[in-house]
Image 1 (cartoon, helix red, strand yellow):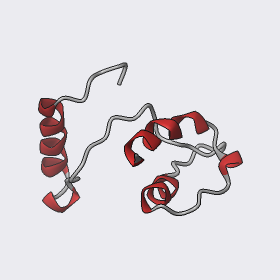
Image 2: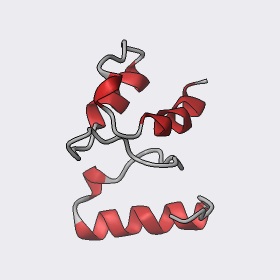
Image 3: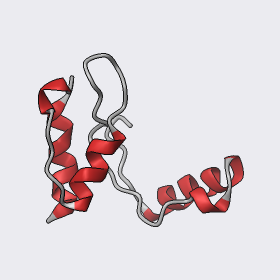
Image 4: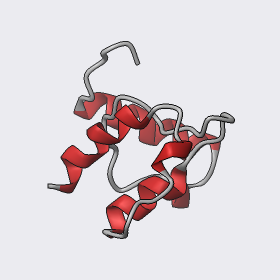
Length: 79
């Protein structure tokens, strides 16, 4: 948040909190620094849109996003 850099120490801290607050199976293999999470105009998170991007599937319904500009930060990880 607020321009914080994703360091190895921060990744370790994030994994530790997830492991403590949920279960070890919820700990992600990769943690990515992105500018934001895509939301619909009605305020719902669009996790499936990001999943489609990483699966190489066609992205549709972009006009439903309230913040389509955040997708650019995800695209950098696809290259």
